[in-house]
Image 1 (cartoon, rainbow, N blue to C red):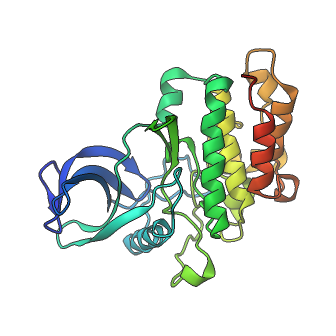
Image 2: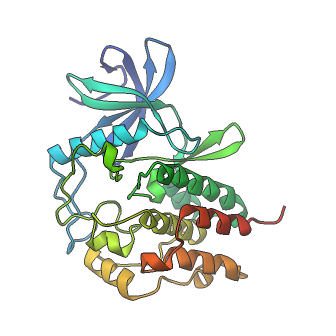
Length: 299
């Protein structure tokens, strides 16, 4: 049964409108009848499409429903542990008899970074720098509690107006890897890549269960590249070609994709985050933050 304005979940959350599609579910604005507060509810929707190694990116095969439900439960468990200003902690949830499981969040309305790039193209470094610092801080919070996101992309980053200007929020933990203490089940990924392959590191395209925190650094650095240039580091027709390019060739040069002059230190920074081998990337998010802050534009 479809969810429309006026739908009430668990006789408590009255749906006001649709906000966005997000990973495993649809996100709606709603009113909490018990408090009168406006919130966001993420409801498990149709399972996303499966990405097959030899296919184009829009492969039609759907993820099994059992796996989608398991991932949704894992996302709920992760969001319960979040506390920071640039992630989205859950504030409730449940399972509606007609509409299935859902998670309740603080309401944040804005636009996805992917949408902003699509509208404006490359973003000025001065405006981008504080937003990307917030992205690194969001990833730092996840890594501190031993959660690996595994699906960072410009479509999982929301930009809205916070108390101090533009605020970035990292969304969508449906593909995250939890610490062992919280893992009561392991979902099957089979031959499908976890996350958006355009942003995933080469090891995630072929060894989805073995990635560590450096996969998030690579994916977020791909977001940086896209935001700075309006394009992605690699152009490929299908996943097989993309995996080969990411494994064998260097990404397109930032200096060739941006109007001059391009800061050489910025180019070195981005290239290090996009290194083929995890061992050649930044060792941890603290190193990334230090490097990014050193690039802060002069006031």
